[in-house]
Image (cartoon, rainbow over the protein chains, first blue to last red):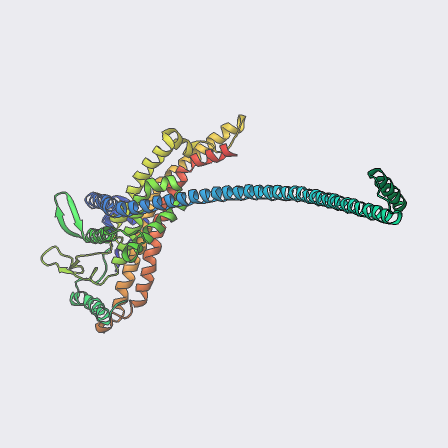
Length: 188
Length: 300
């Protein structure tokens, strides 16, 4: 029924006696001869070249383009990530620097405030002391003035009393002496 | 995905395709082991398997052109499907051949895989092997009066041999350009490893003998590749043909028995395309692997 199965059933010596032996019989069975084989080779080569040019070529180009686009994208992403990392590092450094500066400024402000507070306190103390001294001086002057006035009034009263008691007109020297004596007794 | 109308149309066409075979009563009692001549173009013979190759290649080109006509940054639909197939195949071959070799040879291995796969599947289409014309006149074999227009492309030993021998020639070309002639010969005949003194002489003799065996193996590769692919596909076509005949006189039922085998042949078509592509790529990798080992040794 099927020639190649018939071929397998043929005894080897019978085949060997045929034209071209086993190989010749196989080639005849499957009709492998030069015109058919060469035609198929030419046909296959044409098909392969056409497929390369019109089928695989465009698709491979498309895939290459996409691959290069993806590679570019990845490269860009890497660059962006690198830039982001650099930017983050720069920002962190700037923040650290700003923190340091702020700490320094705060410290300076604290020191300055402390110094100012000290100076103001000292100033206030000085002012208070000066006010106190002035007040004391004013009180002293007032007291002295009152004392002088009292002395003067007391002297006038003593001399007036003495003049009325003695009935004599007192000279300036008498009045000064009586005043001094009276004041010395009062003060003592 | 498919409308009910289109499903009915496909079923109708499929069932209708059995009509010529049924009509050719007594004219086509077995599937011939070889492709048949459809016409002659000068010294070139156009066979029915060749026509299927051209139709499939034309369809592949049309699909590729349609997919790449309006390229989108985010692919969808046909562009997505085609990209998936080609990129998947590229990555798969890159895993075997490495990034350098795959860039050089993808056009060939891609063609081999896609062409074998789709011609295998195209061979299952209704009308392939069943639509043709009847021969008459003297000199016509009374048991073979039917000539189909189309035949499963890989059910033709000339076709599989053409691919295998083309690969064999390209294999030599790629192997020599990658290794240099001296490196190529050294890869086959030179002793592997470091030996000295008498051991070195002994190893040279042993590896020369191994080299001769390797040459025989290399020469037989295209033959094995051709027969493996042809045998599997031709056997599948025979099964389908014979399954249609098991119903005997009840020819209206001829469509039923082959159905399970259609699913099997879909799988066989894919597996055979993979096997052919894998074997050819591994053969190339084996001969071009020489330089990589040197590199690795240098790294070590």
